[in-house]
Image (cartoon, rainbow, N blue to C red; front, side, top):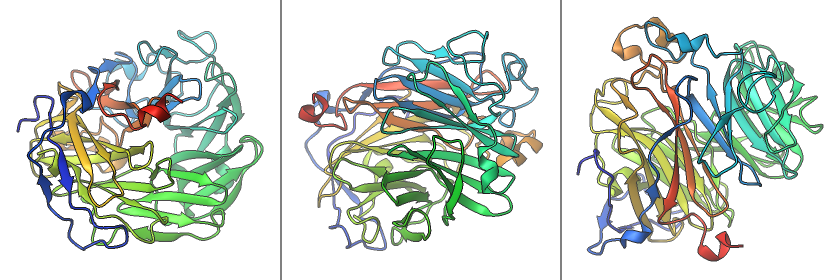
Length: 448
């Protein structure tokens, strides 16, 4: 089955064991004779380039309670090829890039500095890379930005992302100095910050005053994106599971999927559905996996190989998981027909998505699709961080960054942002939204 056309994947019944009865080797997927009706297959709009000038590596996305879509992206200074693009200097303003859409993704406008082209303004001097969003129960939107590994800022917006207050420009210094890969999460009106501190390791900070002052609450054993689903409960993504704290970060316990092995770097957060089930995803040598838990990782459902369910072979990396109503999950990832792993594969890369229904039951229905009909990238993916810049060969290409993200709207449709790295020495932000097929919310739930 070719990756060069949108996949119409048959209904598959996944032999998933009851939660807590995980075998060491994931079961094979058995394909049923019946096909999914055409109208139920996930359908995505064609790629929209949010910007043909500004860089778009490691894009992040948030959908506000009013339905506004916010996208942030790395300005590309450590994600460039040679010779460097003039776009690295102009229109750069010393900040990560941000875009805003109020028409469900039809159009996006950049959110920039006072007097800059676009909507806004944003505060001055908020950082140069690694953005992330979080939204609290009152609709306040938080945004973090890394300040050249020295520290990280946290700013916020109380008007649905139109304008931003500067906040604490050195928020991460409360955690102990130089830092990399910062994340945000919110619970109630509290905001949490996670970062990899060079001296003190991975740490989580908490602010109860809107991001002005911070205190260190804990040190998780993993460094992926995190969520705070209820007061004092913190879930941090691990390569094949999650680290769980039920005392507001004072103690963490790794709870991993038995027998699972990740073959490439992952950044995805644990995703919660409306029933409180938690899902994690990872990339293995033979595909993309997802597993769920009803009890915060004490037991896990049988892992489902989504790439195999979709008939996809080759190399698959960087899955991101989102969830909706009970048992409804979607995973998105980059994939290519080429084999050998991300550092050696030389083929065309596309964005793929798989929707799972009844994910926590004994059998699960899976439908996979190719989101991007055209390639987003060609060749090797370097996963050696900023050291990739020292390698001018094709093996040092880091224009895609290390991850990409997706979000779910009020109707249960998936929105995904990704890097498009073709024809320029930097990537640019791409966006697709689900326009039909299986939603992650049941019709009655999506309609209120």
